[in-house]
Image 1: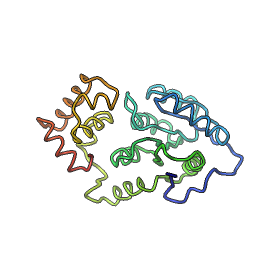
Image 2 (image 1 turned 180 degrees about the vertical axis):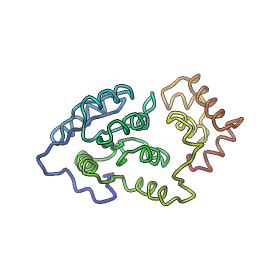
Image 3 (image 1 turned 135 degrees about the vertical axis):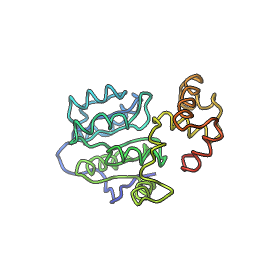
Length: 228
């Protein structure tokens, strides 16, 4: 389905000025596809597959807009934003993710992203979204925009700040969400491409941080926050 911004996205901008764009995603084939689709409209100045690589290369290239994956093995988009926003405030970030979970959207916007679209977006609309973000607009897929509006209206079902949730890393939140949906450790490991031992470690860390004793308490906690 085609994506839209909070204001209508009209397709690729006709201006000849080429924006400098950087790609951050841990899947090489996806980066190659985005580069091929956007190459005629923007200048792709670099790409990275890890947080550390992204931080170093974004600082070196100084792009106008960074297309940022949300979930990566070493911390994901939020870690990149946390590292860059103080030292390079001029760089704008547009999250481009398969995830449409409310906590991912709100977390990335809180961290400083100017927009959030899902990977089902068309190439023309992605180009237009990049242009809007570079111009200072906020761009979201329609359903995702509702999450942000709810959060910043301080509605009880979508709080702007949740100190307990903010303790958790992106990976811990992923594990928690699947755990609350009833996945076994083996299924979580398969879904996230990690080992069962790593799943156990993440669950142990979440239990410790939230001061809970078992997965049933975690499931209720996650359901109360609409993470499931």
